[in-house]
Length: 348
Image 1 (spheres, helix red, strand yellow):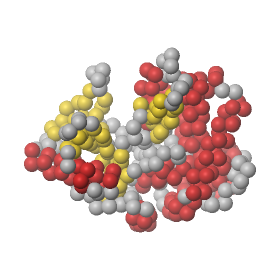
Image 2: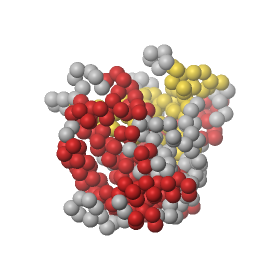
Image 3: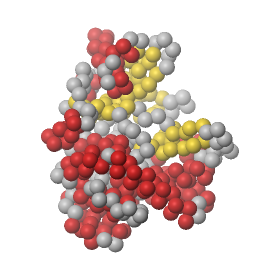
Image 4: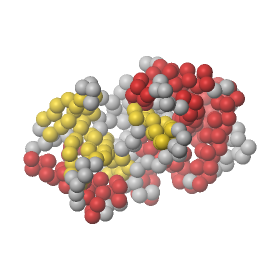
């Protein structure tokens, strides 16, 4: 599949969306912003352990600037992890800053290391984009995972989502003797369902990770998206179904070979029920978010027209033809799919 918009439009955060971010403690004053990290003095390619170019560059700064950034970035880490408790950063320092040379947002990846035990963690500094904010919030509210991020002006700080990159997992781990392929197939069905219900697009294998958890007899898996730029942006319905991306076909083959159709339907129904319960617990917050999205612009009108036609055909419902924007489509898609379960969703 190669019809994804090559350069996505970056949409600004509206005044009302910023008020929402303040209400839910997502906005705070930062000691350094995205633009400050652009003033590096030199860079060199960052290679992985196999010597492959990752398309990230490690950047270096003048010494005085490096000292300032070390203090500011460790403070941001404290804001992200402990709500600003600076006692936790006494032994922390910035060990590396990488710059992404591809993609829409050109993020910086900051490695924070503990000098007492060499343990390290990451966070990301990005340009804020309304589409991504909506995507992060919908993930936080409707998925099994919680998302931690901070916004200040046009800068976005995101925590690192740990897991094995999907493309690496498919290439190196999918065929291991001890990989539980049935559980992988099950989780991919659930992941596919979550993405489609809330219209999160572009889940090619390098845009999600596999969180592997050892269980008492086996391994458990969870697929987590790490890129939210394509939240309800594209016009084609298949862009919101990970099963249709070529680099996911090996996992799709597992689903087709290991799961019967009625089993797939069972897992889809399970995920809808779980999503319904998450929605019910956060219905006021979700309603606030969707109401904002319905009065915001996060895609072109051409894409909105295409998607509402395709969703109307998919669901056999003309209600989609009356949608005016992507916020309307997200709201109606959630209600339409979740209402197939025994209890009708009226929260939105």
